[in-house]
Length: 625
Ligand code: X8Z
Ligand code: ZN
Image 1 (spheres, protein in one colour):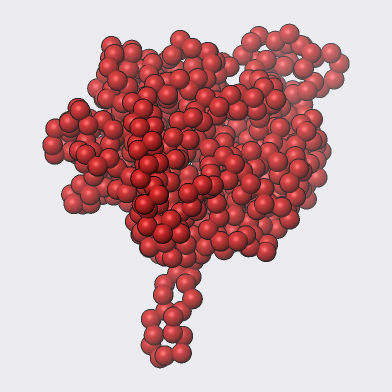
Image 2 (cartoon, helix red, strand yellow):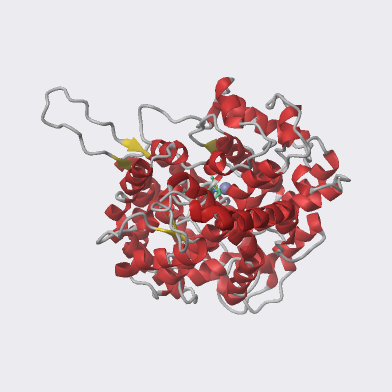
C-alpha cells in the first residue's frame, strides 16, 4: 500500500506496518550510526533509533504534503510528484528496517525495543524499479478512483441540441442510492459506478504482486500477514480475534437483516426482494451496502419514532460546512480539549470544489506532527456528514494529543483505536444533546427510544460484516488463494456469506467490484473499522460510567463532561507508546476487545426486532408480488 495516507496512515512512520517499502542498496546514504560493525551496543542502538525516527518523520511529512496536493488536485503531474515522494520515503524506511535487524539480540529498554519492532513492520523492495512501480500504481489508483464518474448513455444522441445527461461523480450516485425508491434507477446507478473500477483491475493485480514481494523479503508470508501483524499479537491470533468478535455480534446482525428484508419486501414487493437468501445490494441505501441508515424512513417504527430528521433540519437552516464543523469542534472543547488551530480553518478543504478533481472520500491529515492538522471532505448538510465530521475530528484530536510523543509513537494504539475516537464522541449525539445545542426543536420523548436505536443500528450493526469481509477478501487475494480471474467470485461469496447481500446483476466478464470501494483502490486496510465499531461502544460505556451515568447507554451523552474528557485525553496522549491493551485499560479497565458493550447498547432493540420479526413472519405471505 501507499505509505502516506492521511487519515488512515496517520503517522507515516509508525504506520510502517501499513506498508512502507524499502531499499536494500541504500545503506551508504544514511548518516548514523557511524560504524555498523562489530558487536552492537545499547548506546549505538539508541542513537540509531533516535536518528532514524527523526529522519523518517521528516521524509514522511514531505511525502504526506505531496499526497495532500495530489488528492486536492488530481492530475497526472501531481500523481507523479506524490509517487516520487513516496518512493523517497520508502527507500529510507526500507534501509532503516534492514539496519534495525542488527540490534535484534540486544536487551534494550522497553520503549526502544518497541520502536525497533515497529521499524521492522514494513515491506522491503530491494529493486528500485519495484519501488517505482509500487508508488506509481498506488498514486494512479487513488487518483482514478477519485475522478471516476458514471456517464449515462445519451438518450437521444441524434437530435440536435438534445441534452446529454451529465456525468455523475460518486457523491451524486450515492445521493440517488440514498433517496430514490425506484429499483430500476437504483440498479442503474449501482451498475454505473461498478463499471468504473475494471479500468484499474490490472494495475491492482500488479500492485498486489509487488507488495507481496516486499512483505516476503521482510519475512512475512504475504502483505495480508504483514497487516495482521500490527496488533501486538501474532497474525493468527489476530484472525481469531476478528472471528471471535464477529461471532459475538452475529445474532444481532441477523435480527436486523431479517427485519430489513421484511420491510423491503413490503416496500418493493416479493418479486424484487426474495423471501430467503441474500438481499439485492442496490436496495440498501448505500453503494457498498455497508450501512443502511438511509432506509430509516422505510423501516422506522409505526408508532412515535422519537427522533427528528436532522438532515431536514440542517437543510432547512442552510447549515454550511463550516457551521457543521464548528458543532463538532464544540463537542471536543466541551470535553476540555483545545480549540482547533486557526490553520485548520485556513487550510482544510470542507466543500467540493467545482473547478477541479479532488478525492472526496473524507480524510484527516497531520502535516507537521505538531498542529498543522486538516480535514479534506466534501461536506453536505446531512445527518450522515454531521457524524462523519465528528469522526474526522476524532483523528485530529488523537494526532494533537500524541504530538508530545517521539515520532514512532505518534500513532493510534492500533488502527482500530484511531477509527474509534470520533465515533465514540458521535455516540453522544443523542436527541437530548441535539436539543441542547438547538439542532432539535422538540423535547425528545424518552419513551420512544426504538426509533433512534434502530437508526443507529442501521449504521453500526449493519456495518459489521462489511467491516469484516473487506479484509477477509484482501487476505485471500494477498495470500494468492484468490487470483485476479476470481476477484469478483470471491468478493461476492464473502458478501453473500457475511452481509447476506447479492449483486443486482450477473458479474461482469472482467469485473472488479472490490475496486469500487475507496479503501481497496487506495489500498487502505479495513479491519480497523470493524475493530472501531466494537471499541467505540466499549469506550462509550466506560466514559459514561466515568461521567457517573448509569442509565441506558443509548441515552448517555458525555457532552460537557470534563472528567470523562480527561480520561479519554489520557489515553489519546499515550499514542502508540504501549501495547494497545494498556491503552484500552486506561479508559475501560479492560484489556480485551469485547462486543458486550455494543450488545448492551442495542439490547432493547434486539428484543424489539425479534418481536417484530415474529409478527412480520405471520403477515409476510400477503406481501404483494
Ligand atoms: O473511511 C472512513 C472514514 C475516513 S477514515 C470516513 N470510514 C469507512 C468508510 O467510509 O468505508 C468510516 C467508516 C467506514
Ligand atoms: Zn477514519
